[in-house]
Length: 107
Image 1 (cartoon, rainbow, N blue to C red):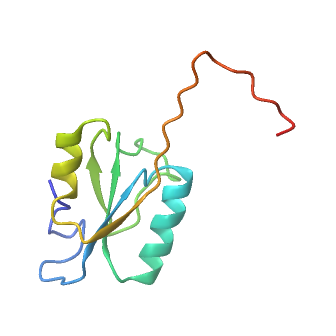
Image 2 (image 1 turned 45 degrees about the horizontal axis):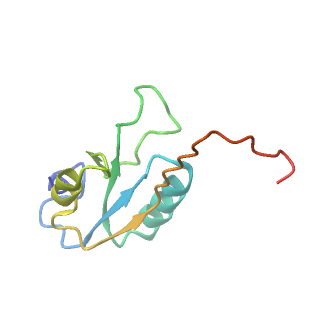
């Protein structure tokens, strides 16, 4: 499922390469996305485990940016989502602490 070739991810005939930002709704991914939008060199899509919450203005995608929903733990979903991409940025972190640890506030 590559980014749709319609108005949500660049106009038809747009020959700019497609870049997909994993975790593009998170803190780091969002900043990367906004920098790439400003540069204007790519047709962009965000790949995240869930779409932005309705009404969450901070998570709303900039105009022209596509949204792909996939779980990075599912290789088939990721493979399908990245088909046709010419580049991207990976900004996802899985943190599993077992057993749970107390993290010091002084770190």
